[in-house]
Length: 141
Length: 141
DNA sequence: TTCAAAATTGCAAGTATATTGCAGTTTTAA
DNA sequence: TTAAAACTGCAATATACTTGCAATTTTGAA
Image (cartoon, rainbow over all chains, first blue to last red; front, side, top):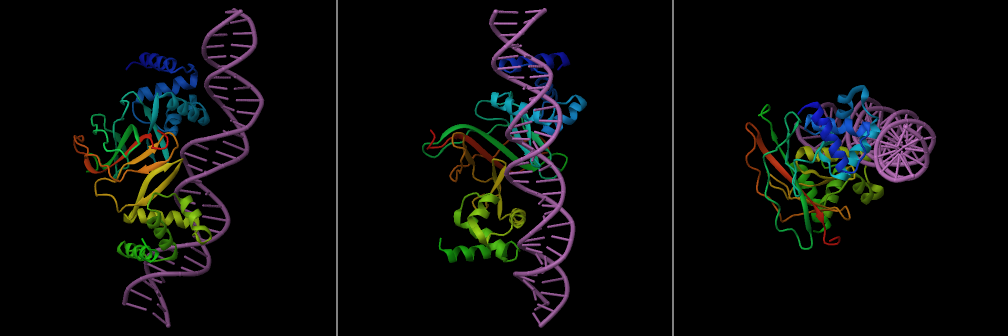
């Protein structure tokens, strides 16, 4: 995707979520659109370099994005959350994440979905499900 | 289960995992056997009261138990891991965990399993999978 | 364009979970 | 009984994340 397209898309997303088009929010959303894989606060700040917003701002923006449903917490990597765009997910489940026990890397399995869970106990209302897979990646196997 | 049975079982588990039957390890394992639901470091220390081992010890014991496969990290509750006995799990998956978005509580779904994931990308080796479900519990629905 | 309310930000300080170094103690097995 | 190995407590440390508050930016209406 071209840089101007990403910029445009970021602003559209912000507006449709009723968020202001501020420098920080645009930068962070553009970055997530650009790399299209989960990023942590740390990765966002480092890849944005000198122009990065303060870490408190990054957290607040990520939280805001989560509340609006633009992104969500994908998985935990050594005690830190990785955030990713929510636009690949259905209402009821996101793609599974695969963590390699060899190298520790995590991959998004964009082409695999499991059937939804059945036989929920009485009174429980299903909303969405998330699958994590452990194993060895192609480098480590 | 009777108290003496729990105590006996704890020691058996420790021995079969090649761990020593120390005061701390017995106490923590007995507690997990007794409540048979996931506990955090905090809950373990609080429910053990004055006789509880130091928090560093609790963490180290939990880590040791994880490495030996006696327990595993079940889920994260407000930034703290909950640990549970692994004896209800198969090699390839543990029971799903259900988190209520109303009250925030998490429940173990001991009677639900999903089929294992298929169509893993080339070279990826499946080891195990874990399912998390979100929704409303019977109190909140 | 102007301007005030609302939203957002930076900085610094604070919180909470978890980890580590090290000296001392307990457990185990020979 | 005893020495090696395993384990523990204490205090210090690491790190992810949160919060208070004053200052700045954004927005929409005049």
